Length: 354
Ligand code: GN1
Ligand code: MG
Image (tube, rainbow, N blue to C red):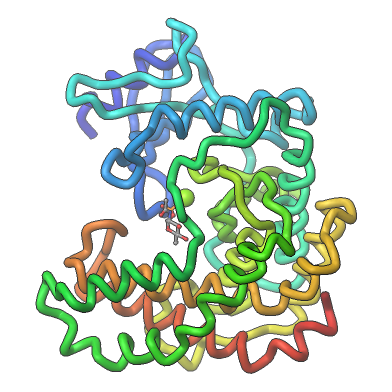
């Protein structure tokens, strides 16, 4: 690993110690994440924010500063709330010579992340952590956060963008992906399920995390308890149903989000029951009746939305999500569209646990 640029960023951001090395970590699809180590100081999680995805990275950092400051006030236990590092100049980021933005978080020691939920207990613990995050954000002072990625969970808007990519077919992949494209279009009514309630003002706009996947929770390695929520890049105003749905999407199936064997994509009702309970317990009774009625569908809508986002990126030539093999975005899309259908067929049953 070369010292530059992670090493240079580490030296600018760290208050103490002498930088020794940086190694890649994490499974994010967007930013570059490193573990930066120092002589005479604790390690830091160092990230270069992807400026193609986040056109206003300073707006992202302004949101994260507000959220982490509030968490620090509400959660004195350092292992339960992500702590942002402020550089020597007092700012929470550093820009390299190429203009790329770097930032660092304190490393929470003795923790682990999971890409797949092993069973109900893990689902409960992770859901409780996300629910608690939403509860803690419910009295965030200073007015609404900046909408740094406008329309992030605007599913009808995502569908329009998807249609444009199908028409353009810039990577020449549309013909071979006809079955998946048809699957998106034949379920287009699903795009309205949460959006209609939002437009009608039936469900409140809250502070949401917007990337509540299972691997954005840190578990305590010793006790297995859910400790804290990470990846605050997309904290924005939103519906709690987006967060609940995104968590269902990654927790309910025993398979990872890019599973190629679609027979492994399933809905585990006992996991759903546990996660619904965990969310309720963590968020302290702040779910309204209207939100509750939409909980069983939320996972379906977000899996559908992400399925079309992956498929769009496949059609665009893999420009947004980092891929690790040919057709990776196509496989991710197939998996998410299958999951959306599996959830859809079980929603009446899921409603019993909401
Ligand atoms: C992206 O980079 P990562 O893994 O934190 C994406 C999310 C998707 C997720 C799917 C800003 O998050 O919306 O749900 O991949 N983030 C952005 O794994 O688009
Ligand atoms: Mg993310």
